[in-house]
Image (cartoon, rainbow, N blue to C red; front, side, top):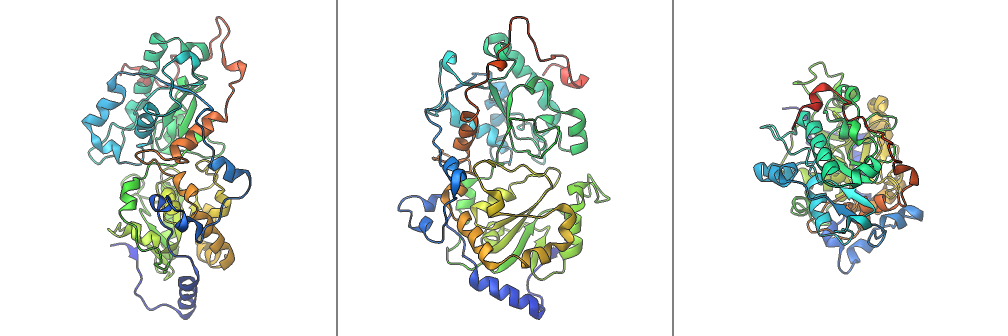
Length: 431
């Protein structure tokens, strides 16, 4: 079994560092639900986000926009969940829960003439393999079919070629619809979505799969499951660096240089025997508890730059160490990632130990106080039922800040921007 575990005889320097952090760093912050009510836990060891970011994070979008939800045939959404309920629990499930949220949200309007935005609920990640992984290859055909349906049944798509529509695209590389970057880049964003606003987990600067105006969101992580694994709030953080996951994807990348652009392989080769690093491919039953006992939680890229580890780290108050060059993080206009996380260039992974041990204690304590802010945690979660300031509301805030739409989105008579026959031949087959 691959793993760098505690229990070995530590060098003197490592013992001193571990003891220092164990004594000085904050214990785990209570989870979101426990931060409601009296607020006593929230006020203890917590720091509010300063400036405009804190204000944005706490915005209330109700009254600032109206959303019309298309009533699509169930084959595009609900029937898929009935067929395979695993869709409700994987990291792409935001598309399902966003639909459910909007159906009962105060921003929903049943009068499309007064709508600011139009939303088409298409569950493109709910066609799963036996292993529970989405099959993106049918997704473009499914999305094209849904757009053809709404363009023929309602007049609103054709007014703007989708310019006032939004779609949730939680695939690895969003609306490029492929899990391998090289193939995703070759495909590009589905042509019919190029004027729509995409709400997506993928974010990387200067990348063909992230177009201007997209809203980057966190992946889905089950709030109830995390709540069930809370540990006493006075538990010290005795693990310095924590990570569980693959270092090599032997099935898809046996050489180890393509997966994670080699960053995870470098992480393993450099720190598998470092006593400050608790890293392993093993995913123990105490995974969530271990994160709450850790000072730093590594969030390296895999096939895509993002992963649920980022959400888990924030919720459990573990400082995220983000190793993904040029990543665009969720709700970056509201969450001060530079203040709560640590960014390490992929090429600097071999120096990770010296980078983390050189961070001043005061800086670490401040990051922990910011992470303990309940608004920060809520913004990363899609709870059932929804709560004020959660990820649903942050998405609505992002849409509201795009209003009013510029007049240029409305087409003149005879004007068209979309090519309905563009894209790979396979995407044009009926779904």
